[in-house]
Each structure stands twice: as structure tokens, then as C-alpha cells.
Length: 319
Image (cartoon, rainbow, N blue to C red; front, side, top):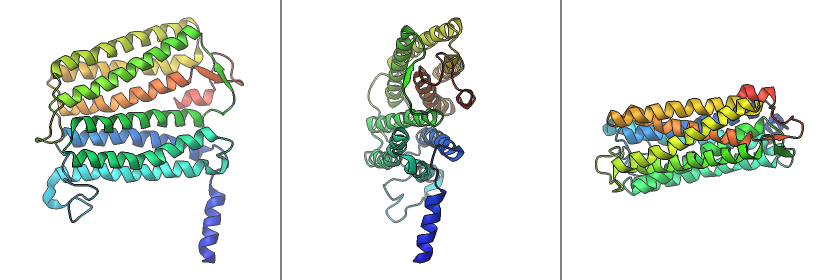
């Protein structure tokens, strides 16, 4: 028992007492894993493996893992479930890495506590998805939760590169308002995209129901807020250069780049009859867009030690 106590004490002493490289690495791992989960979830849906494991929490009535008789669909579905455990380990590690200075960095403590708890909630929603026979609205909720966790993961990444001092607006107010309006249209685009997917052919299983909405109409409705988002982003890009907003230039360029790729993929998949690989890429890019948009909003403000319009060099390199 004494050896266990000493080992626990050594582990406690090893934990960070401030934000260091370990904290930044685990913050990035959390964001990447949250995004990867959408990718594997998309693979489950697009390969018709949604009921590859027909029950939950077990994969079969007798086994927690897929069996050879279940074929590739069982492997894909079980792989997606396994990633939940990997994500949970990363989330708990992140929480442990801020535990010793949680009073000084309450923001980081909350941002690590939420995913540590919500990953299990996601697993429960995933279970309901299976038990409901892949109800399209439950599947959509599953994706919405993933997008929210990606956004929170982006906030965590941003925060580990910045202090928790007072932050003031570092851009003109009209620019900040335009950025927030852009983020609103990003959210609308993602939500309508989820409804569009729920009306399309990729149900996750040949017997799964669709939401009954007109897929062709929804494709047009999905495109409109996407184009509004792109137009507003171009306004931000021009303004960032014209006003010499150094803190905005790189992140807005990244935002434009992601949107261009997302629009190109969206147009291609619509014209090619929604091929699985493009739909999967489109889903992952939605999370990447959410992450970059989140960072764009956060970078509107700077700490008191940072001059208006200028971001710390380390943070710029990170993004």
C-alpha cells in the first residue's frame, strides 16, 4: 500500500502546475480526436454500417466487440465506438493537466471538464441512435453534439496560448459585429446541412428511415447560407488587410480557404450524386470550418498586454 501511495504522489508531482507544452499538446489532441470522431461516424453512416453492431452497449448480445460473422460493417461500427474510449482518455488527461492550477485558470478547468463528461453523454446518444434504428433526428443530434464539442475544443486550444487577464476588443466594432453575423450563418449552414443529410440516401443502414423532407429543396436551402457566409468572410478579409488588423489576417485567410474547399466539395457531391467519399469529406470540413470560425471570433479580443491589432507570435504560429 505504501508503494501505491508513493506512486500516486509521484504522479501528482509530475502533473503540470501551469500551462506548458504537455497541456498544449493534449488540447490539440482533444480537438483532433473530436474531429476524427465525426470522420469515423461518417464512415459508419456512409458504408451502411450504422447497425453493424445491432445493440448497445454490447456489439452483440454476447460480446462487446464485433465478431468475424458481422463482417466489415461490424468492424467499422466497433471502431467508431472504440474511438469514444480514446477520446475519453484524452479528455480525462486534459482535465488532470489543469487540475493543480484550476483556481488560477478556471477557464481551462471548465473547458476540460465539459468534454470529460460529455464524451460519455455522446456515447449514450450513440446508443440511443442504434436502439432507435438510426432515427435521422437522433443521428442529427449526435452530429450537432460533435460540432459543439469541436467548437469547445477550439476554445481550449486558443485559451492555452493566452492568459486569463482582461480582454478588450482589438478590432472596430462593426468588424466584430460582422464576424458574429458570419458565425451565425456558419451555424445555420451546418444545421441545414444536417437536415439535408437526413433526407438523403446515406441513412447508415438500408432499412433506416429518412426524415421525409425534400432533399433537392434542402440542398438549395443549404447552399444559400453557405454563400452568405462566404460573402461575409470576403468582407472580413478585405477589411483585415485594409485596416491592418494583424490579429485577423491569417485566421481569416484560413477561414476563406476552408470555405472555398467546402463549397467546391459541396458542388461536386451534388453534381456527382452524393458519392460517399465526398459526403464524408464534407462532414469533416464542417467541423474544421466550425473550429476556424470559433478561433476567428475569439481573436476579436486581445489581452491588455497585447497591442490592438497584434497577436502574440506564438499564437499566430499555432494557427
